Length: 135
Image 1 (tube, rainbow, N blue to C red):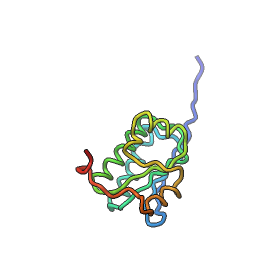
Image 2: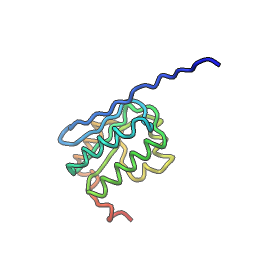
Image 3: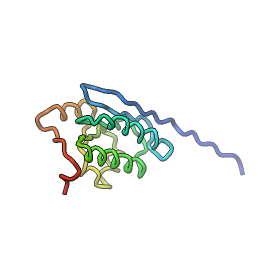
């Protein structure tokens, strides 16, 4: 048997502020290997209790069960403290995973960060709510 080698593309997690709204950006695949840096980035941004948080998943490849778990954790923690968490993505794999798991029922999804920011600043933006308000 020969040796096997796999190239695992790196995943990059960034945190920025755009228009006064914190944005967590992920580039690459979301799997168990990068769960901790993503979870830490979300926790750091939610620590300040912003009104809104955008998860930029427009450059995500693999979006499986670990990614779903991280997204649900972010949305739930946001709801618990009154932060509206929204997703920016137009990636078919991400959209499919979110729809199959019905996570799309708990988080607003926009095709780009610009669309997400526009929706959050418009009169139609989701209101801040606490988890206790969800039935």
